[in-house]
Length: 361
Image (tube, rainbow, N blue to C red; front, side):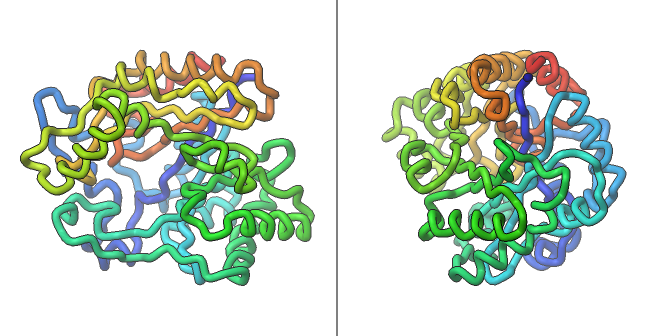
């Protein structure tokens, strides 16, 4: 069985009333993407979408085209980011709800809980110099909210398209250690699943500390090794941390935080991804300058060929795993303002999609 590639999917490319209020009428992710400017010679900005254009995710035909494009590239399904802030508050939920209720596209999916607050710095580069203001706090009110959260997603969990691992529902949590008593959350959700005729969950944590994440009750870990990789190329953890603090305070005085994609991809996979319950993350590139300006981390000179090399290494690491566990998380399908996207742009066309397809066979 070939690799089970699951791509992170950002449902941010359509207006919502909260973004209208916080950042201006009609604000979407495209707002930052379109106005991005190069910060140094050869800096690839702005990035312009090709085949799908500056799309609006409220249009079902766009979601169908995305699914067909991903399927053709060998991606098993999308992991939709889900924003639940406690007390029944959600943002950007309407696109996923429509995917579930409409039954379209007929393409596998699962859910990833982006359990982090939104501040005035979350999406908009204009706010990077301002004092940090919390726009939507992340709260954990207790058992009633945990149960309410489960039932809000129950129609999705019962959907035939929902991705499973060992017969269990795949559910990703962005910040396992940001939750009070996450083991209790896991227990309640598994019990709720059993009560509703489901086989429970396969919980995956996005965390660096693998052992502690497993101790919390997670079934698997998908470590994001970017900070570790950046530290190695910056002279160590201490200097990397210090430079980031100084850059945040004096963005015009401290050099940009740039890395060669070719060099950094040597460290994006730690080697532990060969273990049965550790899933590799792969990224086509990284450049948050549309959101963060000079405070951004930027990877330079990514190409489909170099990305293909990273894919190949990830595939080799999962080769001896059980078929159900040959999972590779692709970060991401459409994070345009972070520079990590697979959708075609004017420079590379479908190059990254072809590189993925050619290396997961």
